Length: 222
Image 1 (cartoon, rainbow, N blue to C red):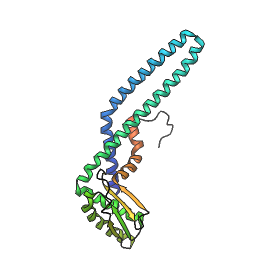
Image 2 (image 1 turned 90 degrees about the horizontal axis):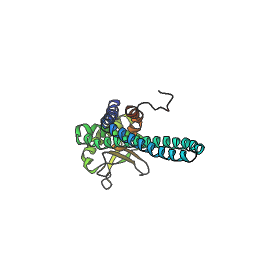
Image 3 (image 1 turned 30 degrees about the vertical axis):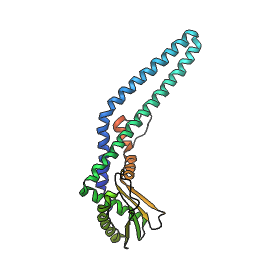
Image 4 (image 1 turned 90 degrees about the vertical axis):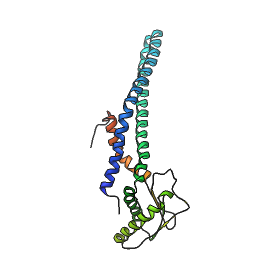
């Protein structure tokens, strides 16, 4: 059973909801820090301009242009840095919140089934090995039976599913599965972290727009 569009939408909506909540908490603080830093830079560079102006008018004029450019560049870099920090914090919090998904087995099991089945289609071999968290082993075995049956019905051949009980996913992992082919040379990373990464990349433009509004440098929109 592959992940349904509804499940994907829920995961995407989950990320966007986390973004909106986090944005409310940190946007005011980020704006305030930005204005303080900007004012500090302006005061510092303006003092340098005044000093240069007193020494020589022509050189001061040139220095003023250079300094304004420097202020603009520093400000832009500071803004970009703060924006990236905000986005990183949002997706980091979203990653931590994945633990809520896996704590509810009735909600987690169908997701696990879908991740396993997708891995089976990606490998398309009659034998695969699954790597999961040790805590998920029992649930993953149940999920793999459902996934293998659904796969066999559609692919028209049986697949033998084994579990690597010596190399579990790290306990700090949010969950999900890594599907490895028989030779061990091909693996499909279907962990929740990896799926969150992919969904985050997809949601990133919308999150940026939600937090910071349209980019002043962007001329065209979809």
